[in-house]
Length: 116
Image (cartoon, rainbow, N blue to C red; front, side, top):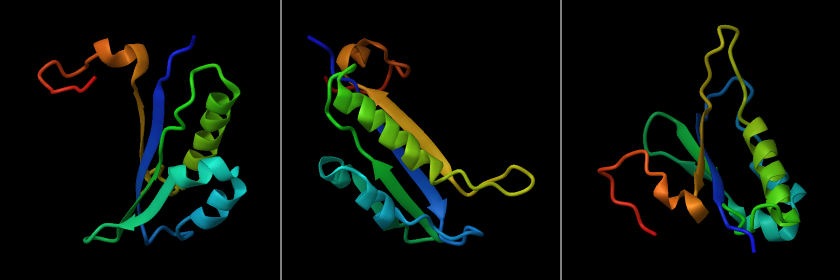
């Protein structure tokens, strides 16, 4: 029996990126049907032209083909948001989240409330 560890990616970017926003609809359409609902966005922020996207966990056990596929699709998702200016700055802020399974005992913020 394997363990389920949830992986997700959250991105906030700006709608005034020099090359425009990535075509998330085309990316979503390129995925197998069961993975398409996991891609969320664009969700516009009410201020400053920010837009957020997410690729949510696939629910598969580590080491299973579906988990490996999900990892590959999330990597492709993050590559949509790697635009940089000549000075190395970017409007693309990305965070990956890795939680669940045996990780519940690895609490980097001991005063935070965690659910199990």
